[in-house]
Amino acid sequence: MDLLQLLTLLVIAGICGAIAQWIVAFSPGSLLVSIIVGVIGAYLGTALATLIGIPNILPALHIGTLSFNLLWAMLGSIALLYALKLLRNSGRVQLFNRR
Image (cartoon, rainbow, N blue to C red):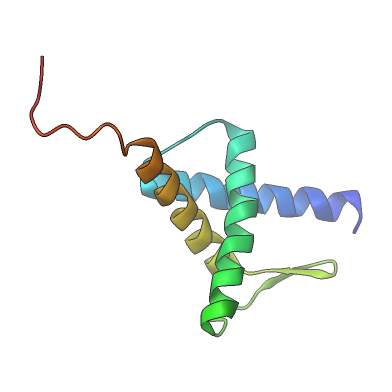
């Protein structure tokens, strides 16, 4: 894998992470965090899809020797951010609005 392929994958992962942050309405950080969320979400989504046995619905992007499935990357990123959001807000449950 050369540098251009790596940068292309990182840009796609960053876009997936940013869209997932917009969907979940939770942003733990900056552009670098979006890229990290996209990369981890891609691995998480692909691993869960193969573990459960779900076939590929959309064709994967082939960049160099790697294949990148956008659907599993998005779903994995959304699941990761939702879990982080639940963990971060777990101690902040308020029943009443206190002033």
